[in-house]
Length: 212
View 1 (spheres, rainbow, N blue to C red):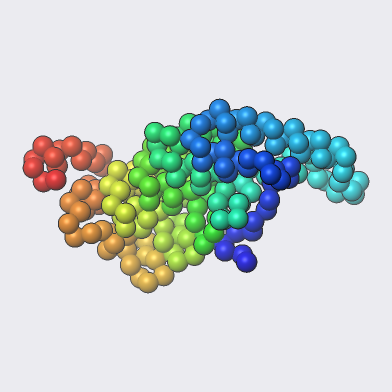
View 2 (cartoon, one colour; view 1 turned 135 degrees about the vertical axis):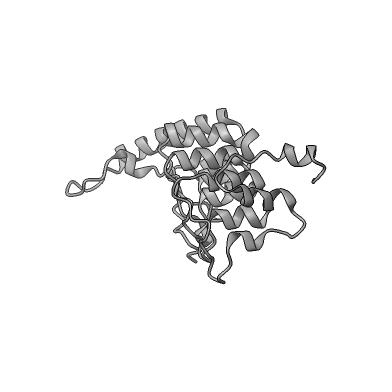
């Protein structure tokens, strides 16, 4: 069934490590090796099964770096799930060397920016924004990246998103809720991140003042 995106199995990966699985290891070397292997395999496939002469399809069309696995994740989703420490280098590799779409739509309309915000990967959030990810795009429930960050208490991601030039802090989800409405009442850091708005938020000042 279609869960927000169409699962498109990558050619040549039967009983082999897929790009999504490779990225989920957190090892950029494995991701690079897997991408190179998949490109070789699809080049070989295309040479044996060339597209019809009346189409504009070429070898690159046989390989899709944004293909979804059976859980509705693309490689970029898997990478940002790892957080900044393990996933950032893979995120940058996928975007800069593999041509990954920073707004690839996965299951239930979830995009990499949503996942990065939810997982607290503030560096990935800032990077995806710099590559053109739009902060106000919602998932199938209308939740934008700010909703994802707020609901999981990721104050640094809230701050990174609020500093984006085109962010709308008043965007609401399908239930009419603002992102700030989803912050736990005891979550001082995330509430202060919203209060700071587009200013640099430094949570260590809260700890210094004894507020955390």
